[in-house]
Image 1 (cartoon, rainbow, N blue to C red):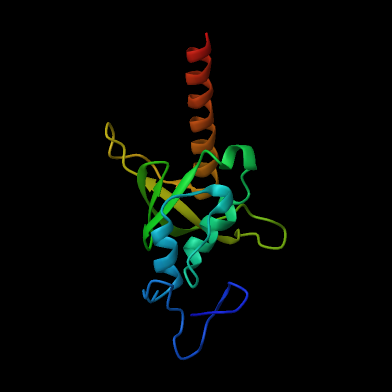
Image 2: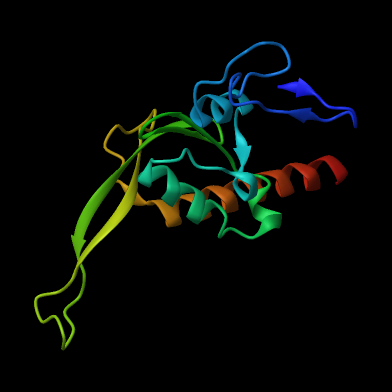
Length: 152
């Protein structure tokens, strides 16, 4: 990057994406990892990771007033920290209900969340969209209760 006359910077092909302080970011994944946990409404997926793209899709479906409470951090492929809880995510296939067009049912591919509980290691997997909504509702409910207790 080179300073321009108007105070901005111009990236040159010869120097690539070298930053102001001389650090060369090797990938967008590295840049996103350095940002740390992001609110659901701002979550940005790592390019080329189809599972992470689904996380971004469902995170951004959450209403803004709820999504601000939900923090998501991609630690590694398939491993995330969601509001302080480490979870694993993976694609799973299920068979949908039969329809006139597909009497044997349609195969559906969906991301499931696997969380380990301190009290029970056999916590069942949960579809990503339901997990994110439930986590938002739990966080918002806890914050409201704490606020009411502090005020009352």
